[in-house]
Image (cartoon, rainbow, N blue to C red):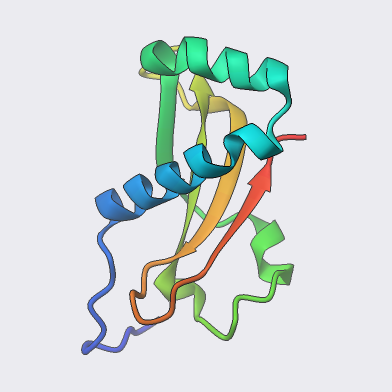
Length: 110
């Protein structure tokens, strides 16, 4: 897919920071109390936030006409160690990297 060269997309590191801030803002209202405690106690040691390939679920969501090439999926959760992949996902965030068209949608752990 080609991207419009005149669009300066937000870089991946900043998108991860923005997604993590959104996660922190909504965690108290959207996570079970037990998950909040587990995350708070273990995030320092084995928590992570990273961009991952799009899951199939996002293709059914309305993204306000934004192409997926201008979006990122960020997962936030816990891994068994710093070398392992995140295996306990607390939130999946679809977020626009286009600063002119902000959009985010969070799927919370159930």
